[in-house]
Length: 108
Image (tube, rainbow, N blue to C red):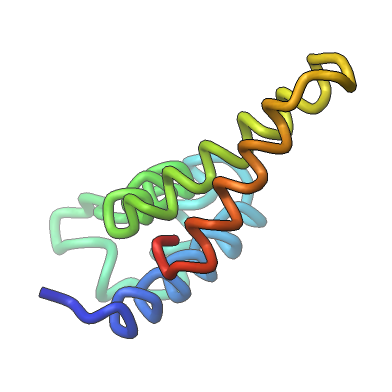
């Protein structure tokens, strides 16, 4: 079992890697960039590519940090509610409070 500190460091490294891959372009460009950057980690002797693309890294980060995925989903829903409902609707404010509560209690 990983500690919160270990998980946070892994997530930070994955998110950095993801941001670099996104700059490379589409899936094929991302894989080419990964192989060029760290060939020993992402290609075997048969030429098979083991690199994940940016979307797959995002999904892996969600698996490693499920509470963060919940917080992200609430934040996205909150933003959608803010733009698609009237000013009298209190849903956006409730979701903002939920995100803040999860974040402040170390759940995300």
